[in-house]
Image (cartoon, rainbow, N blue to C red; front, side, top):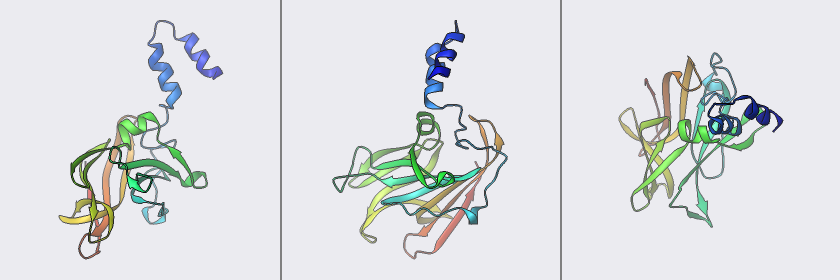
Length: 197
C-alpha cells in the first residue's frame, strides 16, 4: 500500500488511474509466464497432471508447472448457464494452492467466455486463443459435460492445451506452438496435435 501511494505521488501529470490499476492488479507479472522468465522451458512429460473436481481440461505453458484449470461451474449441483466454465490457477510451484486469475490474465490470456448455441451446448473462447474451436456439451455417450474440439481432424475430448513460449515480452510473447492433447470422442484413442500460430 505504501508503494502504491509513493507511485501515486510521483506521477504528476500522468494517467494516474491507469497506473494505479496496473499496480492493483499485478499487471507487471508476465501474462503467459505468471511470474517466471520466458527463457525457461518446461519438459512436457515432467509436468503434473491435475485431477481437480469437475475438471474439463487444463492449460500449461512455459516457464513452470503452474496450471490453469478449466472447471465445470456448478451451482447447487446444476450447471450455471450464465458462466458454465470457471478458470483458476493450480499453483504446483507453490505447493498446489489455488489462486484466481487476475484481471489481465482473465481478459488477455487465460480467461474463457461462453455463448449458448443450443440445449446444453456452448461455444467457448479462450482470451488469447480465440481461433480455437471449443464446444462445451453434455454427452449422452459419456454421461457428463465435455469440451469437444478437433485434433488431427478428429472429433476429440480436450484434456490439455500446452503453450510453448520461446521469448518475447509480457504483452507479446513469442509462441512457438500450441499443443492439443485429448481423446477420440468415439474410440478414446490418444490424440495430439501441434499448431503453429
